[in-house]
Length: 253
Length: 258
Image (cartoon, rainbow over all chains, first blue to last red):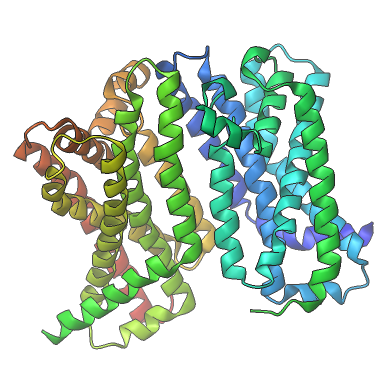
């Protein structure tokens, strides 16, 4: 465990001294919620108080960005020659994988500290259980997405450049074809079927359900729980297997 | 004459680098096209007014903005990787090098947003599509102005990447939020104090988006004064950016480091 924490800190300290990324993300969130959210909320007539809906959407987007960053970071490091060094350490492959997950989780917690607190304060009328459930859902979603990015890493072992292009492009599409920014009922049928495959649809709507949004505009929470659990378990499992098999042959760029 | 040729060669190199960066193309295209073809359509169903017609021209301008800002990333990379040292050794003056980067920034943004404009003209009926051609020179000046903002940020951040990207993100979100790109001025007037309303109205992005809406899609006759406003709002940024980048290069020449 000490080795894992040391490895996590090894990467994390460069991002925390100074914590520019985290503070930037917080500032952007606050500007978006307080200005953009308020303005666009005046135009939206389809749902009541769109700014709250939007704030939750932003929290989901941060979760997604951080999780995909975790997966991508690992693959990019592999191509920068850092992986052979990590593999030479007296740490097993599975522990290395857990270290990546732990680092991603820590970064996610830091990134979400202010946005989630602000969102919960905006919503008001919440219990400790609902906040805990919300945090749990976000971390479940985060692990699922990070696993997805790691599972896609087999592309990177052919071309790192192509991998970055695919995952960054895919990230935008996954967000747009989901209920992060708008309720499912407003999606045109051809988009709704695509959104049904986006993990963010289930993550966003489950968090909204927990925070007390009208269930009529959300996807079924039971489906959401099942799908998110399946996603987290399957992609992390797949990522673990792929990493065990593929990392040994990685060539540095 | 030979210096102009070198300036154009540097600008051409920078121009092609933008389009050869696969991940950047993937991000920009997926973002702008999905904004245009997904977000605009869905928001339209959630609102009482025709938001699709309002939003599609805005996406073209946002494409211009994003592509212009990438000039800053390329300048920052050139500073960090030492490419700039090589470029300073070329038979070109420091001013020439600054002009080359700003020209490339304007050209990349114009070509990229031109492709978005072509798609916008397909998805949204335009009453005066030919007016888009008349707006191009003004959009080019605007793109140079926005590239100037990016150049300033890159020069200020020097080789510290984390600061450059942080500055860029904050500036980008502030400029977009304090504009009428995504929401009409009436909405801004209801929510923000008069000073910020003035800022939003004078924002070059607001002006450019409004010009596209009015003159290309609605088909209103072009008002020369409106185009002058775009120039007046853009040129100061180009000058500030050029001076900041020039100052950074001079520092580099005198001290050997930034």
